[in-house]
Figure 1 (spheres, helix red, strand yellow):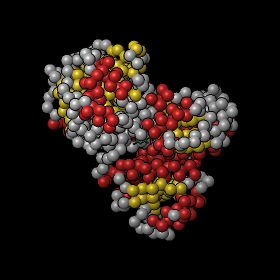
Figure 2 (cartoon, helix red, strand yellow):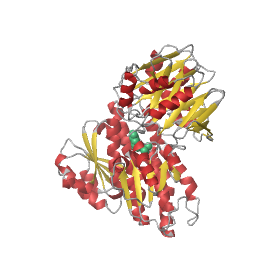
Figure 3 (tube, helix red, strand yellow):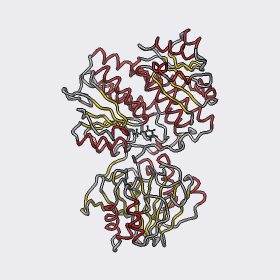
Figure 4 (cartoon, rainbow, N blue to C red):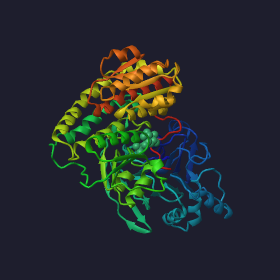
Length: 593
Ligand code: BG6
């Protein structure tokens, strides 16, 4: 999954393209490039980060251009495989985000027709297809070229002696930014916030021709109108606000995320109309997600079954997508912060076609998922830049609690108890963030190990999974999350003094079982780090390190317990000097299967 940008206006395009690209690096950062149309089309690209390209690229004069930052799918990250890609004449340049399924076939055909293709990429067939179809009308040529392509794409095209950008999308995100006397395109809104506060979201199959002062959008060769949307995010939100890394800034944003998520729902009375109503005859629910959002889904299942008694399945989008026999649920809730994860979008489309009611919990207004689903619940996290999801996880949990609170299916007594607990969260999150020092000390300890286990029970089993995922993602330490009760059925074999275990042992109906598990782990010589909310001799005497967290109702404990684990992964990665915001081989959301 890559990031693409484009600019047409009065100003020099190069610095603006590079600035916008630098804000898209969380989508892919193994190579990058730009093309600028001045007297002719000039390109510069290499297997480097955007910052380096900024330092080494020659001045390319022109007020029209495109750019790309790559997450390699076809061909290694090399200068040759980096985008933009050109046609034989060197007059047409293309950047692309997505995957072309039939590129081999198209490539053979083009070569047999005399085209000379030099890279290993799927993308390179596009400029050559445009060249093949070009008959004085660039938009028509792009349309004909894309008609031959099978797969997913968001593309931007410039051509010598053509004063505009031509863009098209299918199953990959693309927005047009409406600036003052200038226009921009990008894979998402945060990249162009410094230049435009109004955007147009293109639909699948749309092709837009963009000049600095006008835009025309067509679909199947017919002119269409698309709405202009005011951007709700503030450009300050996509900065680091003085923190060393986006991840640390976003962890510290979690206090505001909890406050913002509370604001609009706790002012409502118990029986006011809920934001999301479930049909009284709702038979069952399916929660669909990937990565960190999948762990939020596991907690969603726990609380929905616990409080609403609705049978709830949780499925990995990437697995469910290939299920041959689909048991269609009455309703599907897809959880996806970016709203662009292909492994979620594909099964969601299928389930919608199969008449399951589709609901999406997402953080990105205008995202593909938000426009695909019947209902949308927006999380209140603001833009998240760091590849490892942190504040969006908390925001997803808050919306899942909202589904319980306002389902119209719980008693006033449970409502009041839960609402009271939720109102405490801001002050409790403050306590956790204020206690960061104890986490930093613990992270020093962890840097000495290559394998770490995380264990939890009940509603905190998914938090053990999430803690392990964070350590894997950014500190490159092999970490496994387990349901604590499962250790004795196999994983115990791996425990020894070289395998520390992080045990989540906060109050709740599984507390005493967790204390027993901690004793069993200690009996196998493993160092034990315990996340505890109360002083308990049993734990004190067995734990090597105790991370103290404030007490909260078990149902709400995931919000409190995940933050120290996010900080632990952050500070461990920091002590190891890992590239925290841009971990190797990962991307913020993967828009290809
Ligand atoms: C991965 C990200 O690509 O996608 C993870 O690196 C994320 O952080 C996962 O949890 C799912 O993304 P989303 O946007 O569908 O929640």
